[in-house]
Structure formats: structure tokens, C-alpha cells
Image (cartoon, rainbow, N blue to C red; front, side, top):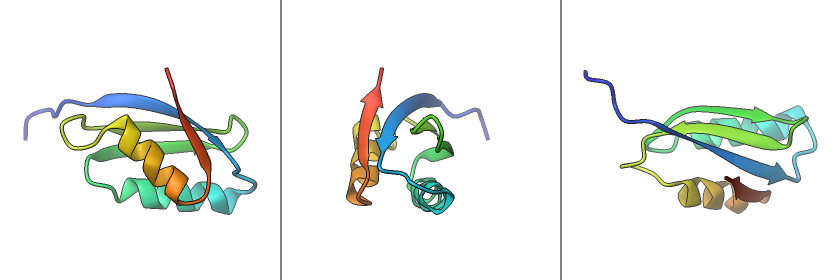
Length: 76
């Protein structure tokens, strides 16, 4: 398979209080179509997501995290 186009977005995520919050966000986001990698940092209150832009958009990723009950915003 050829190298797929990838992009990276950083989300500021508020409301994560513990490592299990981090694990549940990573687990849910990782299953989304178009997500390549996800790394959530509790100390930085942010998620760094590598994704395929023709399958999913940063706004979609943000909405998924918001739907889980966290406060997510796209960092430029």
C-alpha cells in the first residue's frame, strides 16, 4: 500500500482527571475511521491525533471528544 496522506491536529482537552479518562478517550478516538494514531497527555491536557484528512476532520474529532463529556477545542 502506498503512503496515505496524513495530518496532525492538537486538541486541548479539559475535564480529564485521571489516567482512565485518557485511556477511554484514546480507545474511542483510535476506533474512528481515518484515525492513524492518538496520544493523550493528562499533564498537558491535550490530545495529539494523526488522521487521514480525506476520511475525518479535526472538527469531527473534537465533536467525538465533546460527546464523551470532555471540553475539547482545536489548537492551531
